Image (cartoon, rainbow, N blue to C red):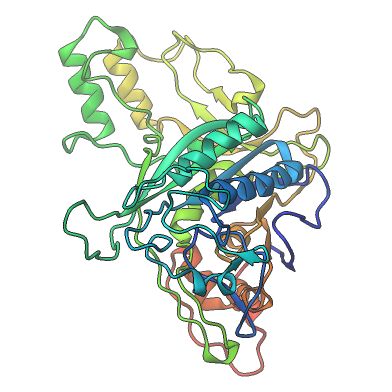
Length: 422
């Protein structure tokens, strides 16, 4: 699939209205570092604002632009880290002189330790206090932009960095917020369900144990022994994923810091962007799940549900137990294809569009392209655009994004773009 690497401003995207199926991004964190181009810090960076309130305001304005390019059926996932107000007269322990040349938007930095803004007004955050920036942003998106906050995902970093503090816990997580424009939107969570286990029980074990505990409950069984969805369980709201190291070739001449781990982006791309968009109706194709039923609930689900039944009330069983044996013998529920509620199910499709307006090292676009989507990465730094271009086309990085072994070296003269299948 294709990738577009654009040098631009996340507040003014060079894209038409409603053209993006999914946005996955991680904006610069507040007061953390200054990004450079050709070794020079450039002004106007998000994250260099004088106060937390100004930072949140800037992010909301960015998000307003992202909503413009997002389809009504699309989703927006935003990863943000929090910050502590400093106790030593600095911005959370980071010297203001290292950020935007010691200035914010062209004026001297007035913010000191998270207690007062440039006008002498008190702002949230006593010295040493966690500022709560992710949630301030999320609440502002709901209140000011009318976005629906569908979920908060906690990214738990299994390899979080040590801290020198001795009077609080070490922070080892960040938030990922899932926003939508409307209550009904594209999702395909059946694609990312996880294996189900309960105290080592298999799906069949849970059905049998549930029947033994509650034999009169019918095919649902009920109670603590109730069986799980045979396709697997929904992912939880805590994702334990290590941060990913990124080795950048010396010839690119780009310093880098932390890169988005592909393992964090992968389930989002698979679960909330379609594998193809119907050219006839413009809707994303959803997984079709064939359901083997006992006859009690044998009916076709709503067209947008993407589920259909394959058994009838005349199926060869005469008890719940024989029904579950039949279901297991025939493979249980399974994804058998993709469809949309279109009068032309044979219409061709085009790739879904996945955007990262703070593209950085290009992780989102990389993951999107290896999974058959069209990736767009936007960044204000030419250095990072160059890094993203290398990463999206490098066979080793593409293999890592697919979580497969790295391919052998490319023979001299062969184009790296064709080292892996699309």
